[in-house]
Length: 373
Picture 1 (cartoon, helix red, strand yellow):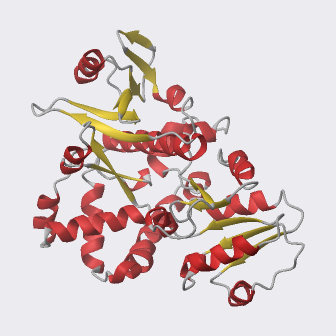
Picture 2 (picture 1 turned 90 degrees about the vertical axis):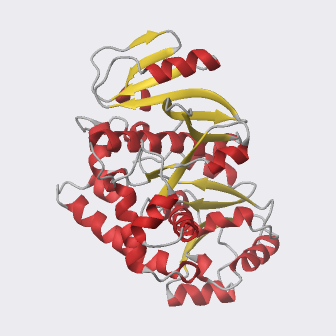
């Protein structure tokens, strides 16, 4: 299945290193190797392999190599300084891709000498657009149940995706999370993930979670930051022109793997739409250089819209996700008229599409297939 970043990455490699980041098992290594096939003398090096590690540390690759894919390089001590040295002294024809842990994305705020030497591409689970013409009765239904990670999504075995997901989550908590900044509260992290799976789509109170977990709100906030850093969950905060006020409001928390959501069918669908919108936002940021973000709207009297796509701190689209309700959502219509912003109500099960004022009532499958990525 073709990933939409491929063409842009090939273009970016002519000028910069490319960092390919995202959740584990989302297809980063597969995409990097697929890109490598377009080069005459590529080299794939995984730092976890002892023989590869020796080549990396000694820089003992042949001068004819014109693309190196470094995998798991973040496990190397002083890896960013190492990369700077490789990049600055490389043969002019040699290109570099770095992939592996989601922690690579942290380098954006590291303020180190790699600044200006790389482009970042965030690879997320499959979207309806990527699935395209593949022979599934409903891409939306399959994404809701299986999530968009390649292995469980593409598997023929109906049981495989459930077994994969159990191993995936346990592996993340035991390996990545517990090794991240010396966090070793396995049961607390495991319980937090289980609680969040049931609270998708509603504003989350850190204080409430802290009481349930017998932890401090500060600790809960830190654990959620770690879940975000490792691409397990992502936060959607309410939109406000005052960024500080927005960050203080309760966020909604979604999973990159929609199959993890246990709150209900409506919440599963909303989570799938959230991942699709975030993927489109990331794509516009990474490929077009735009400044977009995904937010939601909520007033003090409880009026809410599921999502707001914001560009340069100005809302450009409001979105409401519904499984079957074809009647126009009052909050969506009200916000669209008040702010003079177009809106879309994406409905999973819809017979006829229509427009009411500034709001389009769209069948989710067709509308999601029109997003950027």
